Image 1: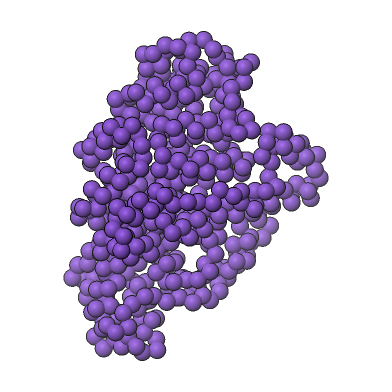
Image 2 (image 1 turned 90 degrees about the horizontal axis):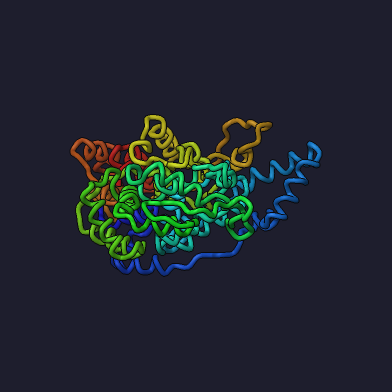
Length: 465
């Protein structure tokens, strides 16, 4: 596989940025990615949603007093809003000229987990998502402070129940265990005193605020330092600790390049991260440019998002409904805004169980045959009263190949684009599918090459980047 194709998949979800990486070079591609702009306008589907605490209170009261028919309408709107929310983000991922920002948003989304299923306020989830987008390439410490003070995180990790004299340790524990320093680098006393420092941090119109009647203003000892610490103080103290850089550098290496990064690399990049004062942009530049220089293909299993977006791009499917991608991701266990638990998606081998592999093959068969499920099925998602039979509609599919080549040159072309290695057995199978007498200018040549592509998508090597 060409290096630019591998890195287009790693940094940008599909192979369509391969030519851009080749043309600009990786460093310029990264610079353009860091400078990329994004839309800050509130999505239309959120315009009528409650945004202040008073509006939210009024909305909940209206549900209590509504009749059964009105409640059904509200529930239906919530279901469609949840689908629109996911489609909104997938459209960003698919359409951005430099999609690395959205890839980093996805990374942070799986690091600072906060699910819509528990938070239940779409506007708070949107705010959480926008904090990740605005700070995707910023400073890790500052991003941590902002996220911990988001209404979504306060709700998701139960800090609304954390009050002076009646402490809830969930947010304090996950701040240390999953968000910053990792297991083994703190004490139970740090968790308890962290919870005291976070007590009273509750919902606010523009993010969490302390409520005077339930906050704890006594001194707390946190990592050996004593004072009347509050949320920002906790983060500052955590980031003074020796082991702080390594959890996040391990996760970045795992997200983008290696399912099992070596401790040597984790330490090497972590030490640099501390040196640049936890600025994400220089860390990414160092990791990507240095790892780009290596022959490290086939070290990571494609996640479902990369798999489906590459499939849709390769088959050049126009106007493909992002809702169908939402459905595929849910089926594969990568439901956006809805990880199974606070640890997020495990990645690695969990993306290639026998069931997931079969689902991928079935999806490839469906799309390569020029079919997709109907929008009627998509629109019925979440409606328990409607259970439509499997229905399909025809779509146009084609694949890019050199119409002036022959069977072997076209096989090589697709192999260079799609597979990190090709053994003798696979080569023979591909030559049996696209035989020596193949005419690339013949009327049905495209279908023959799509058959070859379909075969390639089912290879174990295709699942790796």
